[in-house]
Amino acid sequence: MTTPTVLTVCLGNICRSPTAEAAIREAADEAGLELTVRSAGTGGWHVGEPPDARMRRAAAQVGLELDGAAERVDAEMLRGADLILAMDHSNLRDLERLADRAGVDTPIHLFREFDPDPGNGEVPDPYYGGADGFVEVVGIVRRTARELVRRIAAGELDLGGADGEGAA
View (cartoon, rainbow, N blue to C red):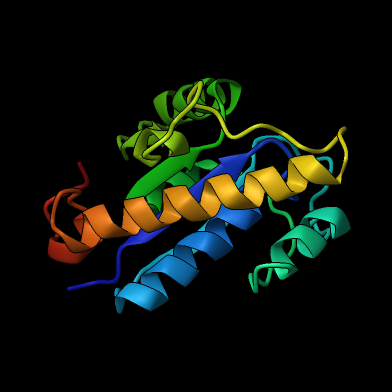
């Protein structure tokens, strides 16, 4: 039995996806569930940079620590994941194209498919807005991460790394 891997993806990997990564880790730790979680971006503008300082501040307000450095998603990351979670429809389309070109069949979903209150299905990009947008994103991703982990722990979402049979 291997530890399942979840990959969260946004545009630049400095706001939404590293926050979702941290929130999923937090929820998995609280549930006693072993998951490997990583994040990446569809664009390469911020590769090597830490998460956005505004996002780190908003996350720190609720005890969520963001670390790491931005990476750009590639076919190997997709192959190494049991579940891929896109932050918005544009990211989803980019990931589906990359997976198709690379022959990767790992399930790709919008992250907010697991949100009890999914709104328009997208995690809004706070990058060009004010502090309230970052706080809103932290709330969305923590709520969604808890439900995602609950579903995994309850066996409602099969991740291939858990039993070798493939993800839902």
